[in-house]
Amino acid sequence: GEQVEQLPSILRVQEGSSASINCSYEDSASNYFPWYKQEPGENPKLIIDIRSNMERKQIQELIVLLDKKAKRFSLHITDTQPGDSAMYFCAASRSSGSWQLIFGSGTQLTVMP
Amino acid sequence: GALVYQYPRRTICKSGTSMRMECQAVGFQATSVAWYRQSPQKTFELIALSTVNSAIKYEQNFTQEKFPISHPNLSFSSMTVLNAYLEDRGLYLCGAREGTGDTEVFFGKGTRLTVV
Image 1: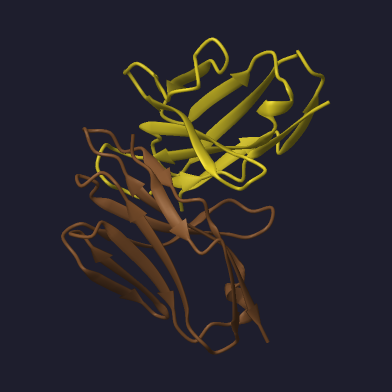
Image 2: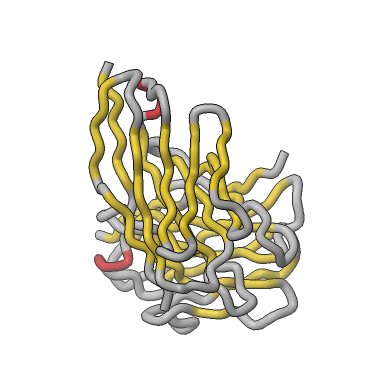
């Protein structure tokens, strides 16, 4: 079945710098790629998503890129702030008429002041 | 707005016993509900996908006999962990969405299961 690889598992950056998280997927028919942020004790929250008809999407300081040929997508957080510290999960939708999201293993982002 | 409530938030059960967790959608119609388990290693494992008026689809390594799910209407789903053992511990998340397209999936805060 679909597997989603996510790297790195741990990421520490200085406040104000950029943070990048990379994911790859196997199913070339996957067409929906959301990113979730999860803070301790909280539910995962959707922060940005991209569909297969796009290559780039930006919401404020969040940028997602999708390379369908390489089956890779990435999240870039520009001008990071301490409040961006959290677990981040990428996901890919599985095809075959179902919508199950298959998640990556997560990235623990720490933004150091 | 759309919200998903899960309860209980935390539960402890003795090894070999069972516990039931519930998922309530507010502000939207939960046409589909997916149950995930987030392991101590932080990975989300998909357990099963339930769509109202359709059969529940279980993932490999998860069975109805172990994780029976009920999804009787567009606002409620429940899942039971039968004969819980140590390997069943973790955070169980309910994710729900409206419709059948690629709409946003809303997650609850999860039920954390500890088995002693």
